[in-house]
Amino acid sequence: MRYRELGKTGYMVSEIGLGAEWLERHNTEEVKAVIDVCEKEGINILDCWMSEPNVRSNIGLALKGRRDRWIIQGHIGSIWEDGQYVRSRDLVKVKPAFEDLLARLQTDYIDLGMIHFIDHEDEFDRVVNGEFMDYVRQLKKEGKIRHIGMSTHNPQTAKMAACHGEIEMILFSINPAFDMLPPVDELDTYFTGQYDEELGGIAPEREELYKICEQNHVGITVMKGYAGGRLFHAETSPFGIALTPVQCIHYALTRPAVAAIMAGFDNPQHVYEAVAYETATREEKDYASVLATAPKHAFSTGQCTYCGHCAPCPAGIDIAMVNKLYDLACMQEEIPGTVREHYRQLRADAADCIKCRGCEDRCPFHVPITERMEKTRDLFA
Image 1: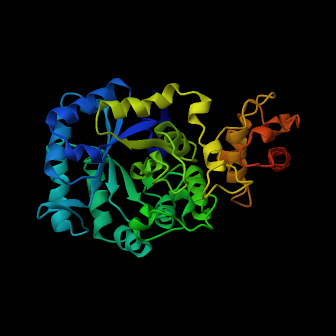
Image 2: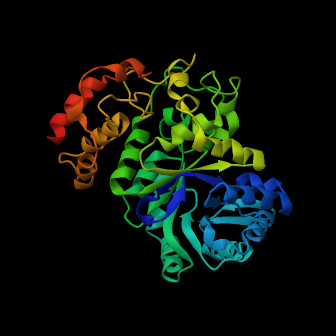
Image 3: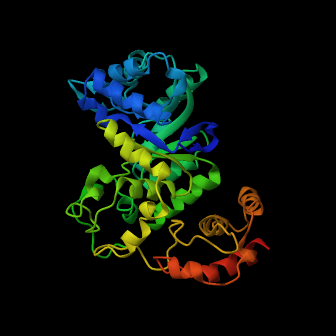
């Protein structure tokens, strides 16, 4: 298992995490079996947004005696009312729900205190400028949460969080289908059977979000990486072609600022299918060729997705990383010092390009890589 730094939190998280939502439908023994295999395979981060009491208790029992081995994303604002999940900002209900989370997980702290599910920009303003945020700050001061995060599906709201200052990481929905959609306020829009035929390429709002997070050192953990399993079957995939779990995972992990994808596991076999990513070949990870030749909604020609399909480079250039740093540098009038330092530390950079164009022959999206290398060389000169 490989580990990545989660933004400015200082945590090193497994690049594949456990999104525990699917555990709601399982008993104590089954939950423990999944968590046992996750830990054996090196997974060290889990997300528990669910307010249903039994799943919280089952996770707590499974983690008993090994709490210190896990980084927990626990949500503030997810409550259980009249036998069902409710998202709430009412502190009279939110406070006991969070204390219930601590009690059932058998812990006195949550590593990542997640402001739960904000998809509207006006709601973001109300939450961060009101008593709800005061409560979150109080939890951090008391040590009941170690860091402040937020979950959202809307790139505009996520951008507000990334620029806020106090919010150190976000849980955001990322997969190649969702990335093609513009910002929406209603999550159901993302799960439509078919998208507009004119859609193609990563929505600029999402592309900008990932770059801003990387620039501001705000880490991203990924939810909905499989689009609820729709991407696994040609019949339900909006691309008209199926992707594998390994390809979906690789797509998410190649977005800037992403530290981990929180995959859902129904059973130990699902865990093994996900962690197979760690030993997968380049061909098995290759989502780019699939998307470029998909019968519907292929990605735009000329758009770099940092997929690494251009490798290997005879000059030793990490072409995907150079492209990523170039895009980050172009976001502002002056190159940020962190971006310049990352570029300086590359073993080979754009100035080393020998213009063989082998990378362009391999690029599924026909990116003019040699031209971008020249622009990058001049920009960082």
